[in-house]
Image (cartoon, rainbow over all chains, first blue to last red; front, top):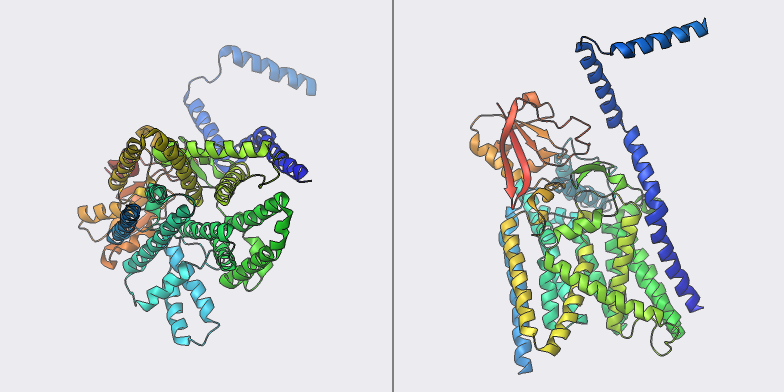
Length: 84
Length: 544
């Protein structure tokens, strides 16, 4: 009986450590990334970054290259023609 | 001859304790006021008022109410919500303040700092007593020297009114626990129940002690079923612990179960902390957080002996574990009471560390909340020290061995002297200056006293406007100064353009790389950095 108890305690202890090192740490990492991405600070940071990009884009003479502009124009025209 | 040696060792022991006490008595005024001091004073008077409401001491209660109304600070949490803290230090300190008739704010806090140190001193004496139950006098003395020469713990012994108090009561509890293991006296069990109740009250993790004490009893029953005859003693111990916990903790009086379980609610704030140069959320601390902090903020000599002791006890335990079936005569995991004591502390340490590391316990301010772990660390260190002592004694290298220890401890003492009064912010010599500054350092803003002294020296104006680019509630640290000086300072928080100086340190609740809350404006330039041993405690920026 006592050997069974010792073995159970020891196995539970080892299982707990192994679980935490493998599955537990992965869950923790995922939770942390989700928390960082959805944090108010990160959202504000991304908003500010977009704002800065738009401001810098407005200052440029030309934002798109001629080739890109042509591709987008053709794409918009195609969409327009399809949804008529 | 032997009696003469005993006398000499006793004389050294008493002299060293006397020296420690004198040192604390002469230096306690050097430590600045931390951000927690005011809250502890508030907590003390809040509960004293509550206790007095059960008596007819109306005049004293009115005085207490007056004191209570004077402890105001917009940054302090509401005492009606944060009233779960222990009363074991704060209420006696409040009573002492009344008895001594103190009316100067500086004195209020210095009284608490000195009282805090006295508690720590008692803890040191008990640690020595505990070691002498297990080791010889010389090893106990050296072990106790390791305990005292733990810079972070020594420094905090003047102003940490929770963790150092917990460390003291935990040490005392283990002493009576060891005594009970040795002599099985009922009186020791009763004292252990009282001390366990106090430990639980100070820090809920104190529950580990009575639980592991009972767990070890079950382990001994498994080895020797005739131990069942002691069941009544352990049952009484459990009942007494619960009873004393209820009696000593007024927080439980109104609603015992509900209030007790509310303690387990994680009320440590969820904030960002600087760790290895990155701001990380303390909800998701890496597994390396606690071991790394212990490794870099504990003297190297402690670490070396600790590793040796840890390895030695682990090896012995493992051998006992794999030989359980063969063993019939003695206990399964220990051969004598001394070995039982070693294993008891070792398993307590290992289980606590593993639970804390893996269960995502929210921490901040280095490993401050876990300074009690230093008790286990030094015990295991002393065990390592003793094992090597026995080894070198056989090889007649004992004098060289003791000389090396003496030299290393002298070096630690010198470092502690250099850090004074910031021993609580110690990093060991193996850590580079660059690496040290990648961690949060002066969380309790002890160095703010130095900052304000400089401000008062350099400015003769009526008002000086201070901005704070840090989470530190700097205003709480001003109480160490006279009212005239205090009135000179105007805090403008993060409204930096109104400030003449900006105080900053690496304490931030937000991620500074994403949030510009604590960014220093361009029209300010660095005035100076306050450094100790390459460690930047705080920086000051001045308006151009």
